[in-house]
Image (cartoon, rainbow, N blue to C red; front, side, top):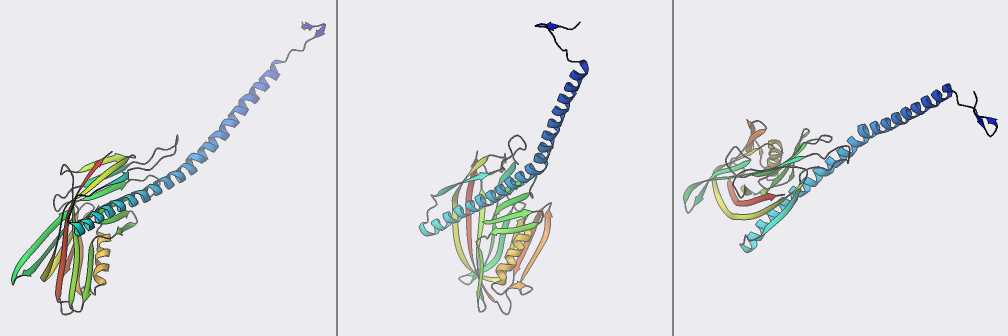
Length: 313
């Protein structure tokens, strides 16, 4: 029986009309959800990878800059010692391990820092061997340096990279190759038959004489101090042999060839450069410099330095 309101008959909505309104509401909600998920998918599949690749690229550049600043600080300490004979200076260099992420969508990419003290020939090292004359007598010099600072950046969206500070050189490696970003203290000049070689051997120590490792996305502070520095010039008799153990043999080989070429020495012309694998991703670069009819007089100025590097978060 119809309901009466103020003497009029009230119309009751039919069950079919209620069902249609409910279906329309559900369909609208589903469509809105699909639109949201589509937008979210576009953002996570396209924009997030693009933003993360940019973050990782920026972080790579930041690490290269910071390692280059570490080299510059150490170079300045050695220069200060040459002028003042004082090794009281120390330096602080921040090093950012990882890249930033995208809030709520992607975490930052973690990096790894390793400080390797000089320990032996299996670690990043350089050895120099030659004979020299002093007061009519012949002596042999066999000098070894080693150690390094390496930052591994296992990027997920950009190209994974590694940055190594070894023997005062800054090197960059990635899947496409490797390059020396900052040259070490290594120079070769010639004048007539005389060849002058200036070479720095830099060793790295840690406070505990053991490896230091950090990982994450935070910033680590590196404190470096020059412990020892010496410089000596020798009149060389016979060949000079230099061996470099490094994961960046190609970059070192290119630098060595270019440096000697500027002084008129090249492969097969007073210079022999060879590379052999020592262990997994570790190579030994052998450089032999031999007097010949064109270049018969050799002089080498050998600088040796020991630097202590500590790290803390």
